[in-house]
Image (tube, rainbow, N blue to C red; front, side, top):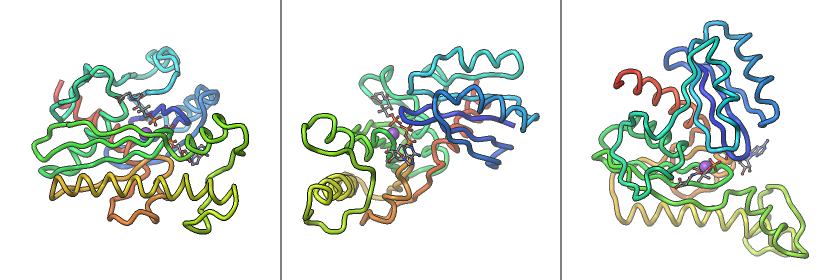
Length: 244
Ligand SMILES: Nc1ncnc2c1ncn2[C@@H]1O[C@H](COP(=O)(O)OP(=O)(O)O)[C@@H](O)[C@H]1O
Ligand SMILES: CC(C)(COP(=O)(O)O)[C@@H](O)C(=O)NCCC(=O)O
Ligand SMILES: [K+]
């Protein structure tokens, strides 16, 4: 069994896999990390490998200390990935984006793929049908937009995510919800339409903490899977074992 851990900038997501089958998912904050890992290892005694992808500020040694009891692998740019990386600054490319690109390449062979990860940030990653990773985009995520409006103005309240009543906001609250939610949806549909104008035959995968909220609001047809990064982590590790 493999324990995969995705350290994002908001939350940590972990999953236990038996082969390709996902047994259980865990979501927790940075301060609950040790407690959660210990519980998972206690409940799944057959875990032999821990695979970590981190873009957050958790110390590497928080994971490496488990090396005494199992094999810990901290994914890095030095690992083998199933695509050709065309990013101009490959060393600064987020390891989460590399894992998403690997998952898309392995799960959807011989086609163009666009992965949209709506987490703390929304990231776009494009891998063409010849398995070239071309890059994409980074923009503020949903919650970050609400926070930014509050943090960088004197008068705007901090709101939590809510569907706007209308396109035309009729109050401060409704104007913020319309600006954040409608703006975000238009932006994502706009990006997808630009990719469509340039490429045919491509699959769009939507993942991240805001997947379910967004999936029903987008005009474009997408393949929504909030576990795509965790599944891709498992696949990236299997690929690494085969290719090392
Ligand atoms: N319990 C929660 N705590 C924080 N964010 C949440 C929660 N549930 C849903 N979200 C949404 O998930 C997004 C963060 O997604 P996630 O994929 O966990 O981010 P990251 O991978 O960057 O840590 C936020 O924009 C927020 O709107
Ligand atoms: C863009 C990100 C901050 C997204 O992080 P997340 O929203 O998943 O927490 C992360 O992928 C990152 O730190 N990237 C480095 C810059 C780059 O990918 O070019
Ligand atoms: K993201």
